Amino acid sequence: MRDRIMRAAGAALCATATFMPVSALAFDVNKASSNFDLVSLSDAELSARSVKTVDIGNVELTSGRIVAADPLAQPDRQALARTVPAGDYPVRLYEAAGRVAAASMRFGEGRPDHWELATLPGQDVATLKDDEIFGYPVDAGLGSYMDADTLALIEEREQQAQKPDSDVNYYDDVLASELDANKGAYDLHRPVAGKKGNVAIFWSGWGDGFYPVFWGMDRDEHPLVLLTDFQVIEHADGRREPSHQ
Image: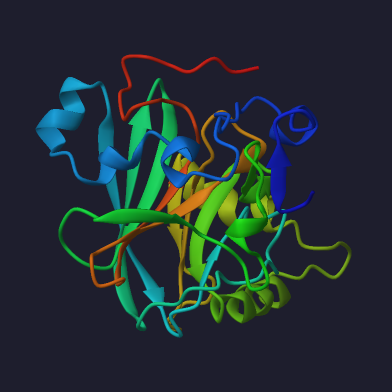
């Protein structure tokens, strides 16, 4: 249950976020999210739908192994099974209803030909039933993108911030002031100054919950974009909100 959510048992994990149920007998990626158009619409088209974009900068992927997770609750989460070439890739946030509705990382230009659910090593989409989905749990109200190698830099920063009389609280002692500079909505955090490897951190929609990540692929099966859907909106339209608990 840690890495999948079921409609019947999802309330405890999902908190205020609402899972969009899948109605087919087997998992259908197009029914798991209706927000794929976010990455293909122009800024003007998004604005007309009451969606605002915020480009927060490039994430430095030193190995191409991407970790998508709550950076405070699961700093040691496994990297996604699919990898990309090492490089610096832009992260864009999509804001609606006063929340971060989704977050994307771009690897190539163009509109994705099709979408796939992102998985961890050992996960198999074929094992999912109609009311199940892989994703990651959020317990600190934050999502993130980073390279798996950056985890070592976070540990190094923790050691640097260590106090003689108490343990380090990474949020209070390191991240809070950086997030406050952006009204708490996001931060492009560099754990160790002068060392390559940073973390894109952002609000997770309505807060704690369980959220899917998707690969937007071209016709040749190359990834163009990675999208985390925080299920604040439906049909890439911020003028309407899905019901949430």
